[in-house]
Length: 368
Image (cartoon, rainbow, N blue to C red; front, side):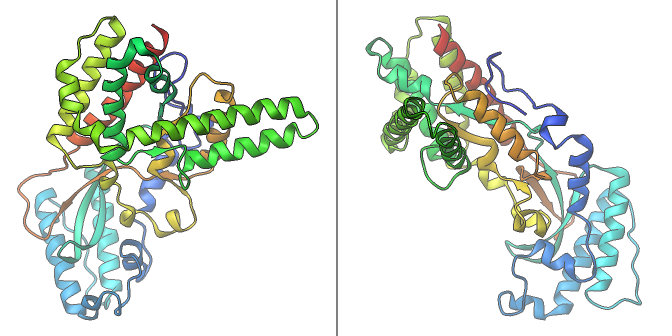
């Protein structure tokens, strides 16, 4: 589970180092459909109580919606879940849901969830996760910073700036120089560790302090640019006017077209919108056992500086402790009869393909 490495690709980390291999990931997925007693409600509905969600006081409404939606699910997939008439609410729903989960597991890789919100009280839904393949999608900003300070690369730098602005402003990709996200925490941790290691060597300590000061200052300077709405508004005109002069710039043009096409089709949609924490086991996010999007999608400083190896070692060791990943999900609700299975991941496919292509483009631009 590595990223933007010297071989110019975003690569998967090995199962051993990733700590989230195939078997573990399957276990994590199964956990999302394991419920006990009335806990199935708490597993899907945050802070479920009658004061916050008055609709749950109407148990007949909850039961009716649940069993009606379950019937729609059964008709589409051709099975019949067990119903124990001797159980009362909510154990009757829990038992039936567990049976439906077992039946679905025999015929599909989809997960089941009981959803509240968006006009639903307790509706059965199928969940299809987008597999991020335990990959870290990290984007180095140093190549753009260097290009912006090179008068011979103004046009490609500005086009690349618009791509970065799109990722930051629309998708809200985390940026290492901003406090509160995972990558900022990693850099701060490394700074503290390194300074402690060289506590008695002032010359080494000063050298590292200078590097951290540089990457923070440069990062903040670039952040002002990619957060500027004008950089996104200029995307179309920059794309139309750009005339590549090198092979790397031609690749930049194709990457920019891919980004702009996605932006044009989904002008305000962020990949983060499809990450549903309400379908994760409650203990996963309450106990910080789930890798969040800002931990696997982020801007960082450089894939070639002196911190590179230490950065990835630290991240790999930390993420190895997690049991699952909060990935984008597509849901199909069964409050109404459904004619066919429908889970659309077109947006996610195009977004992560863009990140992979951008990784190669940045490497090409940095080494031409």
